[in-house]
Image (cartoon, rainbow over all chains, first blue to last red; front, side):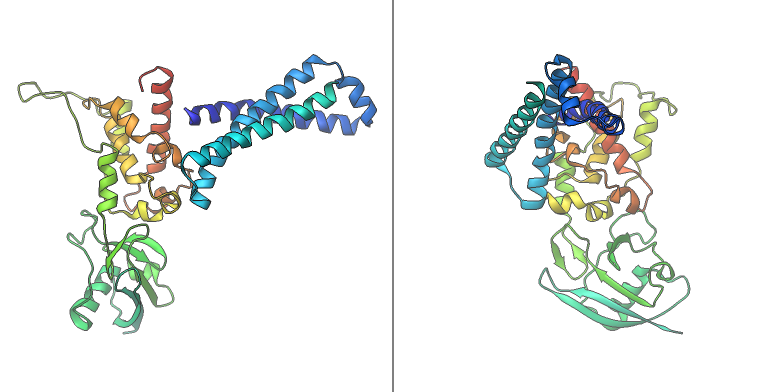
Length: 105
Length: 237
């Protein structure tokens, strides 16, 4: 099941990363200032929804990928590993949502 | 006639390389070299072989750092500078010299339910399986495995995760899942899913690169991942 969730979150990330990068390039080429960007993102529920989806997909995808890395590189198995990757996912979600809310408020 | 400089692993896991000089012959195989050492120089050398024609899968060793079947590996192809280094297969315990302990390898075939489990009795007629059907074509693509262990020795994931079933056992499971006569698909999918099964494969394709029978365990493992996903979504696992 974790494998399916990771593939599904990867599909979401492929879309989100593309939109994110295209938006960055567009904003830079157009010469937008930080104030201009905030003017567009603040109060925009669309951008908040997009970055919420992006952050949640990262928070799901990255910890699942980290699990085998911890086992194969460090020999770390068992329940402590599962708690660690779960905490890692929560940390990613918290940091990511904090950033998403900063550009929304 | 020039001589070949051969380093051969001697002893168990804490052994060492021993140097031998072996005469070169036309069309000489690596197995010929090992046999020459054992019969003419040092009869205590332990190695394993049976058929000598690429069918039995018992003579695989690490030749100049690469796992190969030795009976069909010509010296000309692998010892271009006139030197050979021979070690037992990687990822398996060493019994002695060039003999690896294959028990883990074959135990994992059993863990993957790598044996046919049909539902017909002797009273039933022969099953009729169309050779051109997609399932039979998929099974045929992996069925010629000789169990040599070369893919297992070449696999990085086996090295990092000793529980991993490995390419050969998973390839065997795939040939049974695609066999329409087999009746234990759900049980087999449960046996090969998870951290020690097909989902641990990183698709490095070392198994496919090294398989002497030119099979693609990588493709079989990809098939297993698809089959597990389909079964999970349909609630059959």
